[in-house]
Image 1 (tube, one colour):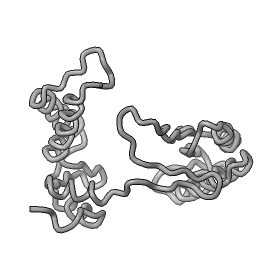
Image 2 (tube, rainbow, N blue to C red; image 1 turned 45 degrees about the horizontal axis):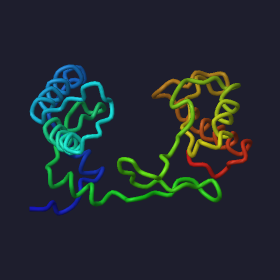
Image 3 (cartoon, one colour; image 1 turned 30 degrees about the vertical axis):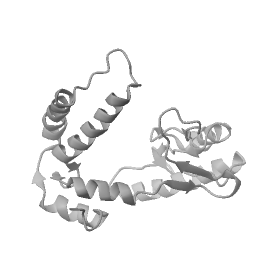
Length: 201
């Protein structure tokens, strides 16, 4: 029987509120490793000396193992310290609802991110940037600009400011919000400087 609808963010939150209470340590060091070992055995997963499998049967088993892993383990919410579970029907309904392609960015700098399969002739989307690494205010714009000026880079992943106007951008403080706004502003300035103002962030 198909799920009536996919599990949206509101339903996910409601399930997390009443979900099984699990410590992050138990999740990271017991539940996930135990279930991963179980899936490896259950689906005869072995890579040998290959990092990327080229055997279609192995690829299919990996997908089924991934589905089983999600349904068995659930999804951990660090903020609530709980786990939510979904059904197989809900998972596949969510996959059906997922967009097949997304337009990222705007104007001449926009790109289309679409589904790729093995050995695709379409090039992958290349994201460039310091990817959440802490950066100083004086170097933030030049670093982002250096990534944006590379023709191979399609989108930018920003860094994290250590300080904003000299004050530490500590989490759970107003400075964290100001830091996030400054990061966005500085990133946009860097993209403009690099001649790619419509690049997706």
